[in-house]
Image (tube, rainbow over all chains, first blue to last red; front, side, top):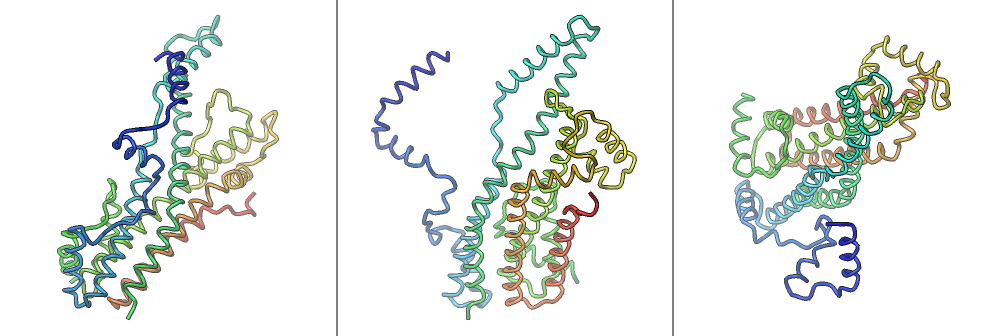
Length: 171
Length: 198
């Protein structure tokens, strides 16, 4: 797509009144969802709930207590599974930009090496080394974005763990 | 005896495993098996709690590694900045070099110190230790986030510990968890900068 086409698309999109079909509206209604932890979930209708409930009751807990313990465990798992997913989310790497950066570096180095005895192979290796150090920095940056996303889940973890503790330790 | 307990615990846990970590290193499994082997009377709830504790310990270790990486990279960055050698994003030193210095490579440390002293336009820092102190300050916000994440997992473990204590009174497992927490705290303290060194 040319820059002109992209600009035309953006201008046309500004005049849009949004999705009209039911399916389109259903899809766009999910756009702002970040992790979905504020949504109410019905744990009791899952197979896992019944299995765990039976096993915890077999350990000698009353029906009510086993019920609240299993709900609390599943709630805690929900938070921790999302924590894990957010953490493991692959960082989006724009390969086209990376190629452009590498090409720009090569060009710069070639210009600098003009008139000197530096051969093309050496220029290429130098560009690679520069790119590697750039990638190392990118790795640290991806740690920053991951930990910042995980930090948003701290309060959910706090709530989930106190609910679980209360369920287990209540008389 | 311990192996029997472990087998018994794994037999209960395997069909109902709740933690799905993508851990290729096997750390999580090792932590989990260590905890399970110390269970006095394994039952559904106690093995599930051990699984959650193992997960928390796994995250503490992972975040501690990240904190180390941030500090090492930041120190390398400050050293290069001080040497005014940031052309094209090139790096003279990487995280591994800084790790070597911290592990006691005095030759590399004195080489860095000499380079810093001889750098023509160095106004940033004059020694390796002051670069490290600056790295702490420049990335204080990110380090605090990692500390918060670690602290949350420590508190989670304390909650699980109390719950486990309520259902499976076993001093051995409590002691093991205390040791794990002490180890995590020691690792973190080792990362903190000693102001007297700079």
